[in-house]
Amino acid sequence: MKKSVFELKLLRKKQSSYRFEKRVIWLESILSQRLKTRKELADYLNISPRTQQRWTKQYVGHGIEGLLIDEPKNLKSRIITQEIHQGLSERVNSSTEPFLGYWEAQSWVFEQYGVEVKYHLLRHYLIQHFKTKLKSPRKSHYKKDVEAEKAFLKTR
Image (cartoon, rainbow, N blue to C red; front, side):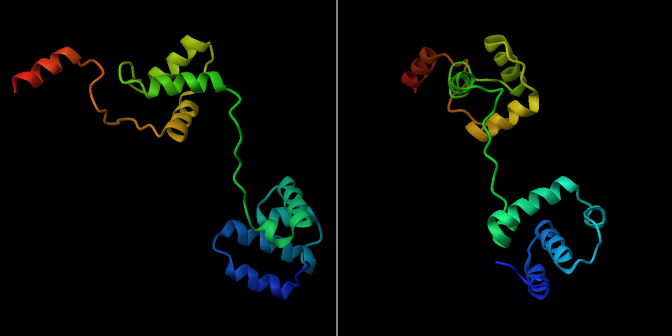
């Protein structure tokens, strides 16, 4: 559905973020033919010509509604495979051999699978998939002697 320049000005005022407002300004500028070339428009809005191509494709395909929503990009990791994910899951949830930090997790992945993963990528992956924190409380210490705990509880 095509919108008039006046409707676009009203829609522009309703936008909650500048990112979407900029898209409405872009569409408004194209319809009103305020600027002569796409290069001038890109410079005016401080965007790249490729961004204009993407916005045009979104607008033609889905209309103004498609232009004003951003769908999340759920891309699978090419570095961390299903096998590495499973191994990380076992180590993160282990009560006997947990990771002592993200650096240890990084070196463990390299030792076990021969894959060098950047620290920040692995840290983000562990937080996103396993809800890890730099310091997380554990139910018990990983070096705790179970027999000593039983003996201690019997004497109390």
